Length: 233
Length: 330
Image 1 (tube, each protein chain N blue to C red):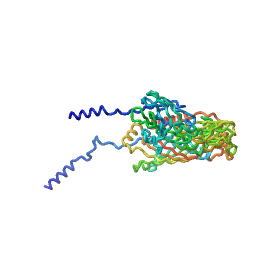
Image 2 (cartoon, helix red, strand yellow; image 1 turned 60 degrees about the vertical axis):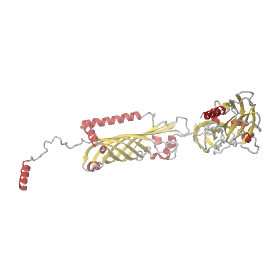
Image 3 (cartoon, rainbow over the protein chains, first blue to last red; image 1 turned 180 degrees about the horizontal axis):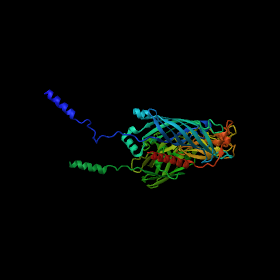
C-alpha cells in the first residue's frame, strides 16, 4: 500500500507544471517609487540675531518680540548614492521681522527690524535609515551662504530708514520624521498620482554668520530654528 | 368625629393671621443714580461709604403697610430689638436705640430721609459719628410703637434689614514705578486688596534731576489737594500709561491710590519721579554707542516699503517653478 502511494506521488510530481503561478492574475507587482529629485520645505520658526548685541534684545526695543520667521526652501538632488542618500543643492528665501512699540513714544510709534534672507546651499539628505531599515528618520546637514537684506525703521534724521546687505555662511542641521508609515497606502497613492515620494515633518537648527566676516556689514549673525512640513518628489 | 371637625374649624377661625411686616423700599441715596436696598446689604455690593457719611448724604426710605394705629416709627439697630424686654434692658446692649422717631400720623405709608451719620450715632457731630466705626454691617430695626414699652407682634409693626457701612479704603499700592519717556510713561504697581479703580496723581516739576521728590503735596497720603488727577484705570490692574506733560528735561512726581467698590479712596502710594526725556530709536541707540559698527555709517537710506507681498509672490513663483520642473522630469 505504501509503495503504491509513493509511486502515485512521484507521478503527480513529475506531471505538475514547472511554474504554477505564471498566469496568476491576482499577484501584485512590487511597487517601485517615482524618481526622487526635488524637495520643498515650508517653515516657521524664529531667529535671534545675536550679533546685534544686548540692545536689540532689551525690553526697550525688541526683547518682547520673538520675531516670527517664515521661509521656504527648494532642493534639487541630481542623484542618489547607495547607502548614503541624496546629495544636492538648494535655494532658500526667508523673512524675519521684529515689531515693537517704541518706549516712551507717542501712541502707535514703533521700532521695526526686518531681515529678508536669500540662501543658496548644498545639502546631504541622509535617508538611509528610512530606505534600508524602515526607520522613518532622515538627517539633513546643509551648508549655505546667506545674502541677507536687512532694514530698520525708524532710523535717524539723516537716514530715516537704514538698510543694507549682510553676507555670510549658514550651517544647518535638519531632523525629519517621514510620515509614510502612518498610512503607507496613501503615501503610495500620493506618489502614483502626484509624484510625491515622501512627506515629512521636521525641525531644523541653524547658525548664520551673516555680517560677521565682511567688514562694514551689519552683524546680524545669530542662531535660529525652524519647523515645518517637507516633501520630496 | 363631628366634634373633631368642629374643633378644627373653630381653631382655624380663631387663629391669628400671619403678622405682616412693614415693607421697606429705598427711594434713593444722595449722590447715587440708582440704588436698591440689596445694594446696601453687604460690603461686597455697593455699601455706604465714608464720603457719603461725612458729606451728609441721606437715605430716602419708604415704609408701607404700617400699622396706622400706632403713633411713631422708631429706629434701632442690633439684635432682638422686636422684643420689648431687650429694648428696655439697660444692661443689654445687643439692641441700641438710635433715638430716631418719625410720626406715623394715621398713615400706612411713611417716607423718611435719614442721614447716613444718623444711622451710626445721631447724638454726635457728623464727622465724629463717621469716624466712630469702620467697616461693618448693622441690622436696622424699624418699629411702629406708641411708647418704648409697646409690644410689636401685630401686623405692620416691625421690619428689619441689613445696612453695610464700608468706611475703609484699600491699602496704598506698593512698588510703584514709572518709566521715563518722550511723551508717555508706563506706570506699574503692586495692587492690594479689592480695588474698583486706580487713580494716578501728578505734580508737575515735583522732582529734581536726581530723581528726588521735591514737592510736599504728597506728604499727606490721604489728601489729593493740589494734585492733578492724570489717569483713572479700572481695576483690577497693575499698570497704566500716562502722558508726560512739560518740556524735555522736566521731572514730575506721581503717586497712585486705589478706590474700592464703596468709592472709598485708599491712601496714596509713596510718590515716584518720572522724567520727560528724548527716546532713541533702536538705530539711534545702536549706532550711538562708542562701538558702533561701520554699517551704521555705510548703510543706505531707502523708503520703508512693505516687502511681505513681494516675498510671498517670490515664494509662490519658486514653488511653481519646482512643480514645472518636476512635471518635465516625469
